[in-house]
Image (tube, rainbow, N blue to C red):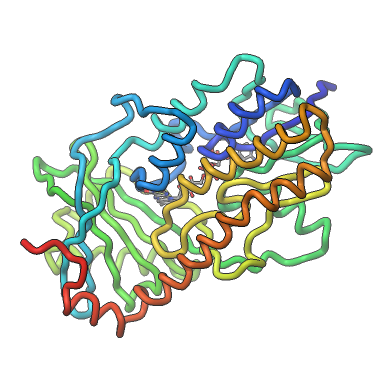
Length: 357
Ligand SMILES: Cc1cc2nc3c(=O)[nH]c(=O)nc-3n(C[C@H](O)[C@H](O)[C@H](O)COP(=O)(O)OP(=O)(O)OC[C@H]3O[C@@H](n4cnc5c(N)ncnc54)[C@H](O)[C@@H]3O)c2cc1C
């Protein structure tokens, strides 16, 4: 059986960043990722200023091949109940999410063994973990890193070991893609429709396509999505033929509300990115937290100078991510403000902070 100091499950922004930086510790690192062209991560593909800042802090610049057309400078907020609309300035980069993930993976040095395929089984063994891959291969690792996203198997494994239930709220995110038929608008949209979802939806143009997506309670999620889509088409907010979706994708997305929703691991296993619950409950922006928590866990490993002192790594990581946790709790407070119909009416009616056109 192959033997590694660290095994990482998931090569999204969190896992790929951690793998790249952990390779510098001199420890042996293994990374398995289940994403492919057909099972790609559903994502709006908008790189927020916070994520741009984390990349800048790691001295990384973005290759232009990752960007898509058009680049956008504003968000159009639409409230389906009042039909109020406002434009707000936003400096996001519009990109192809799969290309972004692949670029981050391409930065991982050859010393890391990167394998395409899913980890299907995790078990705790003496002084480490045994992992089984989809093709039947198995390996042993001393430290396990769960970077496996919003439906994390490592998170489930750790919770089942401690006999606790996962109380973090999860929505189903559904996205559909349509041809833009030559139309393209200089903004992406953020849509509120309390009748079909207590959460929000979005649309954006990308290289000749329009993407429409949103977060919905798990019960009757597809029906709620279709109802909202029809309404937005009728209101003239979505310029699409709702019957002609080129692609439909869906996954679970976390919406953390309190400190206990964040789980960062311990006892040899660590969680980073959305697996830890690090995603904004107000905008579902998660790339910055994934990059940053991956970076911070690598820093915690570096602190021990290449020794696998798992207790010290856990203590250091806990201290380093406290800023992310605080920031996300503030985002939850923001969510309560903007997701309330009453305050949203006030904000949209007064036009505070909106673009004056
Ligand atoms: C519909 C939608 C739209 C979003 N839009 C945006 C946006 O525009 N901007 C933004 O900043 N954030 C957005 N987010 C949030 C953002 O996508 C996530 O927070 C971010 O991708 C989390 O990164 P991660 O590395 O933690 O996990 P992920 O990106 O989810 O990566 C997890 C990886 O683990 C792999 N994996 C899972 N299980 C296994 C296994 N058993 N074995 C091997 N591999 C496994 C998966 O294949 C995947 O590649 C969106 C999320 C959704 C759902």
